[in-house]
Image 1: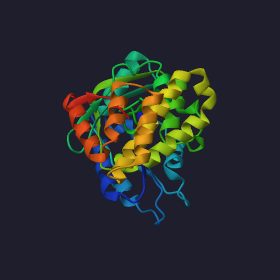
Image 2: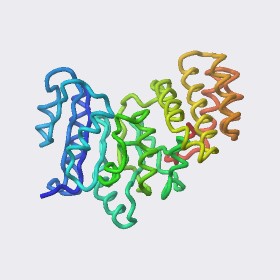
Image 3: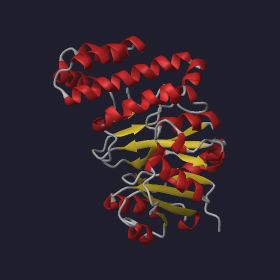
Image 4: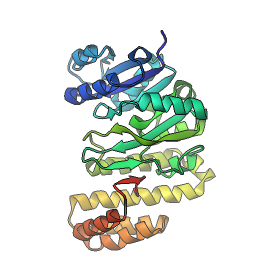
Length: 306
């Protein structure tokens, strides 16, 4: 029987997290006979995660050389047989009805990509921004897609067939979102679809994300020329994130102030202006301003600033 959905889980030396991720796939309301699990292990140790993958009936791939996250995803996509593909990070866990509910919506709305919300380890939820649906290319170019990240996506396999290999794109996630937005309409489930693990996507990885965003802007320069307003937003959000990263490392930073005001220059809003002012006082004032900002957000807010 051809599976309805293929869940691809790249992993790298995180067997405890991998087991939780695969268990969440086994708890899906969609019958297990309709789900194919593919684990692609980039670890250098010989078949590091094989026993866990086999415990859950997953197809297991362990390339000789670590191809990186995007390369592991490419291997999984090439092997996938399902009509729909989910790229699940090994430290994320699916909500029980995530796959079934997203498939139902994809079929009813005839859209190639369906995403949903995130619940963080501390219980905080980030739900989809209701504006990010249909043609989302402008949002993808301006890095305004949160919480639309790979783990929350359910994608028709045919979409990936129209795209370049993920390994060829300028960054693991941003380039993929842009390419998907070029070939498919998006829609969303209004509720949480994954519980987010600790991973490395928090503020500690912000400097790497900044580099990836700048690389994406450079690689898609011709596309940004078609949508010039998105480049200013993208640069604004990227400089804002850079300032955040610098203030996480230093209590006070001249470069953080410069990046914060450059963010306001590129994308002048109340939020970027408030952050630029707060950056003058360094991390203590930034943290105070953040608490004030978050006090006006609901526990389950939609999207995020940076």
